[in-house]
Amino acid sequence: MESLISYAEEQPPSSLMTNSSSLKQESNESGSPKCVGGFVLVHAGAGYHSESKAKEYKHVCKRACQRAVDQLRAGALAVEAVTAALVELEDSPFTNAGLGSNLNLSGEIECDASIMDGKSLHFGAVGSISGIKNPVLVANCLLNEAQKGKLSAGRIPPCFLVGPGAHDWAVSHGIPPCPSEKMATRFSLSAYKRNKRKMELAEGTVPGQNRTKKRRQSSENGNGSGCLDTVGAVVVDLEGNVAAAVSSGGLAMKHPGRIGQLFFYPQAAHYGCGCWAENSGNMNPYSTAVSTSGCGEHLIRTMLARECAAAMQSEDAHQALLEAMQNKFISSPFLTSEDRVLGGVIVLRCCRCVEAQPSPNIQGILVEFLWSHTTESMCVGYMSAQDSKAKVTDRDAGGETGEGTAGEAVGDGGREPGGDGAEAGGSQVRLK
Image (tube, rainbow, N blue to C red; front, side):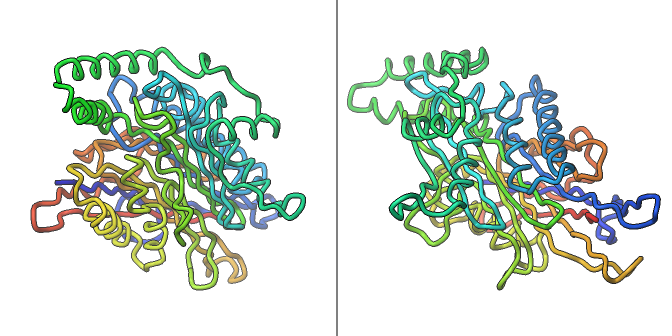
């Protein structure tokens, strides 16, 4: 059984919920509109966040939101702002991304990161990269290089690189290396020693022919929802461009070279598993940005980011997210053999809207942001460029609100056998 938890922070100019407020357009002394726009939504992972570190997770989410908003206020595009948010999340020793990431079976740190620009639809990604403090900078650099066009002799620029090749490419493009011993923290080293001891004890009690099976079970137990703390962010800028990014150190005690949900099926038409961003246009009335967290194998096999983005083109975003998580993830035919389906997602969608007052020619951006997860908790922060400070919530399966939330939990729907019990909610802000 899986429970799907979806939450709403309602700040709309509509009357969908009683606990609501709206962001009003600011004016300068001459009375003309003051252009202040943009919005960021970040997460510190879907998993289990211990009470002892809850304050740290909330603080880093606030700092990440502030970093992104600072970029937006300075006129940066969405892809630059989302990169800034991820750098802040990677630099925290408490998150499983960049500095302080989980160690693999060999006691080394290997990170994954990806980023997608909704305006150009380009993306960049790295996997199993070691010796780089901020993997998202490498992913962003790959994205930027790809946008420049073909290389000499008509070669196609890489969009994602892995392992030593990714490290060497990063250094050659001006991203400084970081010694591996400086990447590990006392928290990650302590966790590695604990997990290694558990594996040794388990393997020492198992007959030779069953050792592989027992090793796998031990690894799974050690990599429960507490380790699924991939970080990510989604952003919309003043021009209505969206971007999404995600970064992770991967599962604790993972096999060296393992790559999680940050990558895309290269042979498939849809390529979003860890993040997705796409501006409105053609058949899509909404711009959408998605960042996921959870068990990478589950997210890859269901291509959750792309599925959620596609669902956001429906009129009712709340119901659409519910159905996508329930039907495309929890009840996915690709995950029927799994005892637990572990994952979480933050979603942003926006569209241009014409104001009746003070002039029909003035347009704002209506932003809806949602998040949902099947894990015990998910720490989320959000902030608009018009806000003085970020708001953060750390929801658990009981639906309790965390620090600074403006709304309420609208669903803790445990799925009973033979039926769906999940509910979904959403939120809106109007940027002008």
